[in-house]
Image (cartoon, rainbow over all chains, first blue to last red):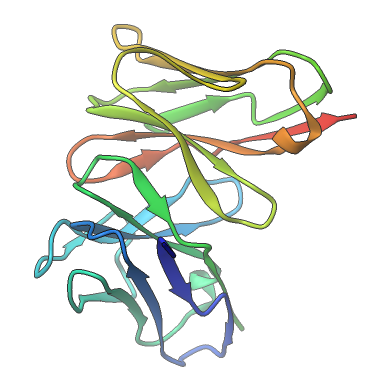
Length: 112
Length: 107
């Protein structure tokens, strides 16, 4: 099993550009999450999807949008990238919210 | 103040030493998680616990719900244990994370 797969692994964007981070899981999990990780801070929740067809804002949603395309896939979109969005992004999934989470390998995004 | 506080932030040990990492939280939780993040960046779940104690190989995790405190212990530490250890708590629909403890085990 691949678990949680994120693409791309690295990305450099210019300010104002848009991009979509892709995430897919093959564990038939109901819940999926997008986090960002910044130096000296814990992972912070951007958006989550408790089940297929639902999405909700997390702690730091501004500047991001998400789509739960189907049960497997949960994408994160930056419509107009800003340097403050330079970070490492992690996708995760769990059977239900609050249960053991499985993480993707992360996407290192730099906005210049 | 963060909802999840870990100590120490950084820890250096000699191979073979007993390691303890602490986590305190200030919110109601359904479970507490210990995660490991290796230098390559990937994050793996080590434990999920809601009471008592769990053991997996050389790793032991304990939780005291009344005191809102958890510890992660590593016995007979090894250089391959070098990583960032993250405490997280799950509650209403999400997880809240500590900033992590960077452990370096020297041979």
